[in-house]
Amino acid sequence: MSAPVPAPYRHGLVLGKFYPPHAGHHHLVRTARARCERLTVLVCAASVESVPLADRVAWMREVHPDVDVVGAVDDVPMDLGDPDIWDAHVGIFRAAVPRRVDAVFSSEAYGAELARRFGAANELVDPERRAFPVSGTAVRADPVARWDHLAPPVRAALARRVVVLGAESTGTTTLAEDLAAHYRRRGGVWAGTRCVPEYGREFSEAKLAALRAVRPGAHWSEVAFTGDEFPLIAHRQNEAEEAAARTGSPLLVCDTDSFATTVWHERYLGGRNPAVEEVADRVRHHLWLLTDHRDVPFEDDGLRDGEHLRPWMTDRFRAELARTGRTFVLLRGSRRARLAAATAAVDELLARGWDFAPPLPERTAAR
Image 1 (cartoon, one colour):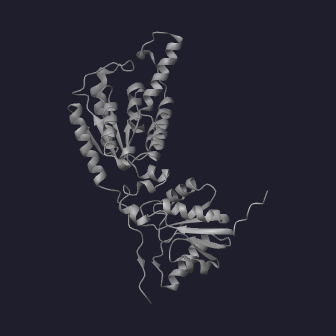
Image 2 (cartoon, rainbow, N blue to C red; image 1 turned 90 degrees about the vertical axis):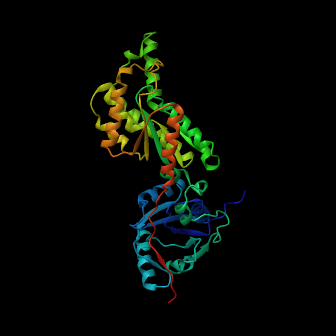
């Protein structure tokens, strides 16, 4: 059996903004990794850009766990014809990657000069973007059109998350499922639109089943909650959302969220719980759709006993959404009317786009 062929280079370097990272970037990194014993990816971000450096580094590390990923803030404008500007950039690069570099891998024309300044070989990878016809500029201009070129952590970060919430038996699950189905019918990238179920209901079903295992015939009103269960419910809800956002479309529909758990804590135990609020603030959502208790008759499905509390809960949701500055729409009327109002609100959200801040301009005038 023949011995494995050693990699041509001991240490390679890939440098970029990764604003945001896409399939072309990942192809470049994988190609370089295959040709190096060790590879460093240097993520350079300018302060004016709207995706934090830490996020980009984390995304690249997740996709490429066998690569050293480091980050640096680089606020020096780019001018390929100015040697002083080059000196400033390379000073930042060398501070971030002090180890000797044997090869620089890139898909850009500047790769040759960058390699020369590192005293390294210049390896050009798919400069014509034939393998993956995508660029950071194209993704920033229209993430939806380039969605298939984005890795799971980037999808999760960019997906527009819409929450349907409300008091007991106000049609939240029905609306959430109807809304997700509406966008799936658009086809294309939207066919993957997901609806995240309410983890609190699953948790409640398990509690009731455990009680009935001891006392068959026990009623839902006999189930007791404890304060430490609500942070767990909120955390599991966040986890389910994150998993769904990584594999879905640019829209994620959530049947309640961890923020709603703060009000459910009030409903069952009274008062606020800072631990639940802290978990709720970890995830960013973009729009809340509050289902009014009016126009929906109360149905006891075995996990409900709060018909008399529905007006109070609607008011609490509305007050907390307003107090915390969350964008929301109150939905009333028939099932069809609520879906129409919900899709109008979501369409407006999607029409606003993603609004990436422009990167530092590149000056390429001849000298």
